[in-house]
Image (cartoon, rainbow, N blue to C red; front, side, top):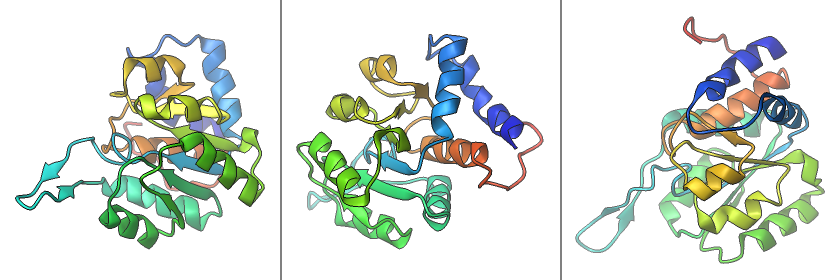
Length: 197
C-alpha cells in the first residue's frame, strides 16, 4: 500500500516548482504517516482564487468536486478537518458543513490563534497536523503545523516555505491530492489508481 501511495505522490517529485532534496521528500512522506488533522485555507486552496462579482456586490466562488469527495472521505475515516480563512462566505460554510466539516472559521484575522485553539480543544499534537495555504496570510500558521503544503500556484515565498507543493493548482484538486496521498500512505484510501498513475 505504501508503494502505491509513494507512486501517487511521485508526480510532485518531478515538478519544476520545488528544489527540495530527495531526503527532504522522504522526510515529508514520513510526516504524512502521523497526520490526523487537515487544516485548510479557502481562497486559492479550495477555490482557484477568482471571485465572480454579481451586480449587487455578492462574491461567488467555485470548488472542485474531487476536493469535496476527498474531504468527505477524510471526515468519514475519522480525520479532523478544519478550515481557517480570512474570507467570508456563508455559501462556503454551508458547502463545507454538508461535507461533514464542523470547524469552519471565516473572517479570521489571526490564523495562528485559531489553529492553536483548535489543537488544544481537540487534543491534537503538532506532529499530527498538516496545513495547506497559498499566500502571505498563511505564512505564520504554515510554520506551526508539522507539514506545510501548498498548491503549485501559491505565492513564491509560500512555496519556498512548504514541505510539499502539490502539482495541482488551487481549486483544481490540490486538496484531493494532499488528502488522497496521506490516506494512501496510512492504508485508508483503497480505491484503485488509474492506469496512468
